[in-house]
Image (cartoon, rainbow, N blue to C red):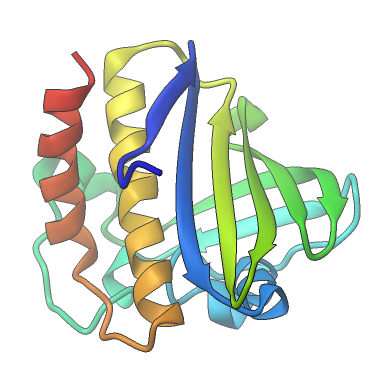
Length: 176
């Protein structure tokens, strides 16, 4: 298992993480607004296939660190909202929903018990097969998954923008 996401096919990124379980605990961090707000975004989800997803991003709230937003992401400084639809739902093992403006891409979370841990496979597909898009999405998901892992392990979360900037540099070297 690589600690980095990989391009599994054109326009598709795949990440794997081994998280502390049990599976219902990890599932709650994917589906419950209050818990999801700690690592990704708050917002209601209608938990059924075809249900509406609203993600309210407030990156400044993801860690206690006071960080400067990089210039290229300044438009997100006050937050952002993403609306999608659930495309697949099989609790507590599978959650998929559309992502982005116009519901252009799809993100899927697959959970599998692994003894006392949980194997998470996150796949973001239907992305533009464009280096800048893949770089931004890869560094973003890597950062979000770092925060999720921190919370599930009871650690103080890493700074979002400092981690994102570091990951953008690393993925920039990897995605040539």
